Image 1 (cartoon, one colour):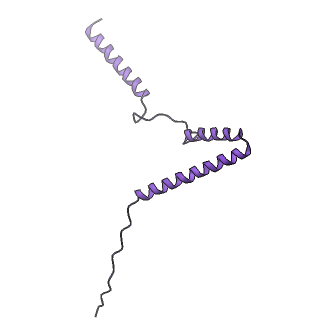
Image 2 (cartoon, rainbow, N blue to C red):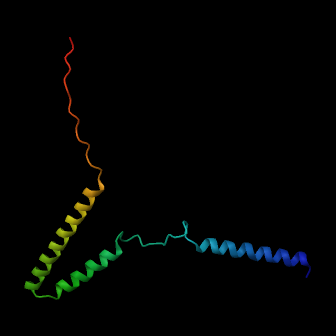
Image 3 (cartoon, rainbow, N blue to C red):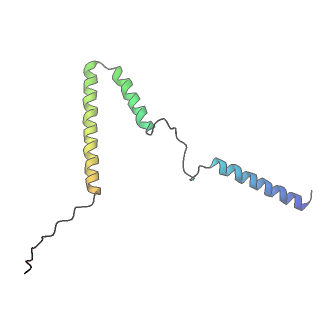
Length: 103
């Protein structure tokens, strides 16, 4: 095998390896393919776990759990509202307007 043949084979191997690597890398380099079934897979599994736990509890404990979850969601909403209010720019104060008579 001549040096030319060896170099040509090496270049071919590099091109093939580069093509395989580019096929295996996500488009933006950090994207990971996700399932299209749910935009929040972690929340749906948590919801399924809570439903399963709720079904195994007596009715009195089910009501207590429901009330506790409701209070948690209300507190979360209050925290989000507070955070959103802090992110919004302050409203500019109105400047006093003076009427100037034209004669």
